[in-house]
Length: 254
Image 1 (cartoon, rainbow, N blue to C red):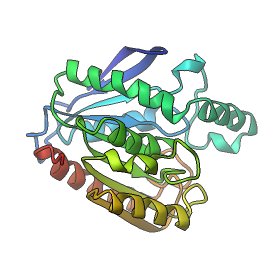
Image 2 (cartoon, rainbow, N blue to C red):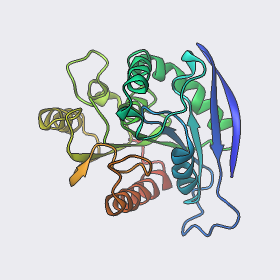
Image 3 (cartoon, one colour):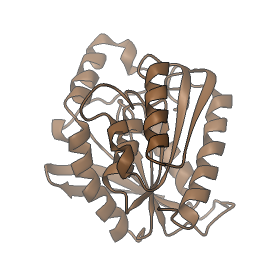
Image 4 (spheres, rainbow, N blue to C red):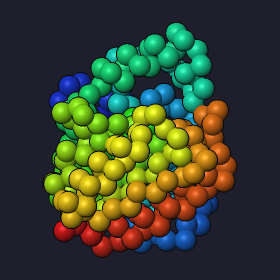
């Protein structure tokens, strides 16, 4: 069940949606109903495909918050997973991606966590992100270690780049678990970054998994992407469900 809301942040007002389990669904585990998840969007923004993913996650027994990270730009799009093939749309998307820094989303996340708490998700929180959202999820775990007990990234880009705000630099602050699902070939997260991230997480003593989805392309887990892979998509759901069930069942914060 979707509820559209607005969130007051330090920089303005973000549109968002809260998803709860559909009464007609029969999740295999409902004890996580008081557990919340922040869903960090990909570069094409909130849309029907992400709504469907957020609802599926909610039906596992979580209160899921899907915020618009591009709210500072006002109205845009609408875009889909295939919008990158249009040069005009691609230019607008990349302008918003570059103009929405990790630091901005970090500030926003304080408001996102408060919103989940107000919605009843007062326990440890999970974070999941796709594409640009993957790095935001890892950053959330490092920036809010006492709230975010689990962070998952799927085909996330630049998780361990040379940038000062690269998510891997926050590894020392992470108390929860981290899962990173990597596209088989992904220019935004090459092997050298994967190795750098692994080293940072291991050195910091973070409970983590970095898994390579061989044969999958960047965007494989999101249904409206041209490279969507049904088999890989279901594998990602299996991993995510198990990861959150384990990491959020008892908090698992160090």
